[in-house]
Image (cartoon, rainbow, N blue to C red):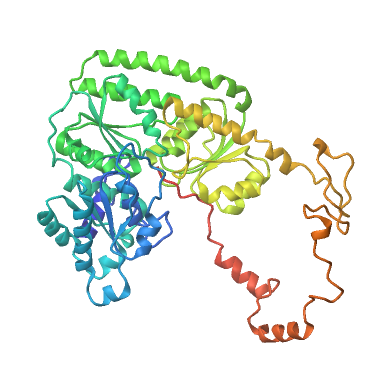
Length: 544
C-alpha cells in the first residue's frame, strides 16, 4: 500500500515538466524518488515532521525511539502567535524491551490517553518511524480506536524514514492533511475573498509581515499551512476560493488535489523581494476576481503595491550605493534558489552562483530567466570548491544555512544565514529591507579588516612600531607578562625539574599504547581518510 502511495505522489500532473511528457513516460512521475537511506537532506519522517510541526495547537506524538523525536524537534525557526503546545515534545520512547515484547501499540495507546486527558488538544498527530513500521505496529488501528474513545481526531502520519527523502515526507504529510483533516469542518464565516497559503512556514515570524498586506486588500487568510496554523483552520481550508503555493516542491500535490476535489485554483508565488511580493498580491487579487470577487480588488491591489514599493525603495536607497556590484554566492535550495536571486538583483548585487538543490524544473527556468546568459547554477559543490571560490575572492559574501557557515568563516568571508534556523524575517517589503540591512552589516563589519590585516609582530615575536590603531603590543615570548594578580600573591616559580614529566613513566606509557597509536603522517592512514570523505559535499541541503 505504501509503495502504491509513493508512486502516486510522484506522478504529479501539476508539474509542467511532467505535463510535457508522453503518457507512457508521465507515469514515472516528475521527480525520481531517492534511494532510501541516502543522505538527501533527511528522511521521510523528518520531512513529514517539518511540514506539520508548525501547526501550533496540535500535539505531535512520535511513535518510535527517543532519538527520532530528539533529532526532529524544533528543527525550524517557526513562530506561533498563540498556542505553544507544538513546542512540547511527545514520544513513546520505545526501548529494546518494548520492541522484543511487542509493547509498541500498548505504549502508543497509553501515550495518546495521557495527552488527551492532560492537555485536551483539538487533535493529535501520530508519526510512524522506521522501527515501528518495521515491527508492524498498526498505528492506524490504534488511532482509530483512540479517536472513538476520547472524542478528538487522532491522525496517523505514515511516513517512516526508510521510504524515501525529506521531500517525499513533505508530500506524505500533505496527503494526510488532505485525506484526514480537510473538509471535516464547515465554518460559518465563509467569505468571497478567502485564500490559503501552502508551504509557508512562518520562519522567524516572517509571515506576520505579509498577512497585513492581504488584510489591507480585504483578503482573509483562511489557513497558512503549516506556519502558525490551527487545526480548525486546516479542517476548514476547503472553503477558501484560491490557494497560493509558496514551496511547490513540498505541497504542490496538495494544491492540485484541492483543485480537483473542490475546484480551487492555485498559483505559485514568493514573498522574497519587492517585485515578487507585488506579483503575489496581483495574482491573488486576479484569481479572486475570476472566482467571483469584486472587480475593484484589482485597483486596490495596484494602489497598495505602488504605496508599499515607494516606501521600500526609499528605505533601500542608502544601501544601494554600499552594496551595488557586490558579489553573492547563494548556497541554499528550493524556492529560495530563485526568489532570493530576484530580491538581491533588485539592489544591484551580482549573483556568482546559486544552488538548485531541491529546486523544481520550474525554479530552474525562473533562474535562467532572471540571470539570462549566465545563470551560474550548481547542483552541489564540495567544501573544498566552496572554500577555493571564497578564498580566491570570487564572492564578497555567502548566503546559506548553518552547515556551511564555517567554510565561509575559514575563508575570512562574510556569511549570512537565510535558511530555517535564521532569526530575522525576510519576507515581504519590510523583510526585503531587513535582508539588505543584514547583508550590509555582514559585509561592512569591521572584523573583516582585522582578520585580513597582517599580524603586528615579526617571525621572532618583535612588535612593529607604532602599532595601527594605538593597540598595545603583546609581550614578547620570554619576557614577564602583566598579570592582574599582585606580585606578592603570585605562586613561586617551580624549581628546575620540579613538576616535570617522569621519563620512566612516559617510556612505559609509550610502550603500552604503541600498538594503538595512529601516525598522521602514515600514507596508508591518509589514503584511507581521503577515500572515506571523498564523496562529502558542501551542499547545504536547504529546503523551502
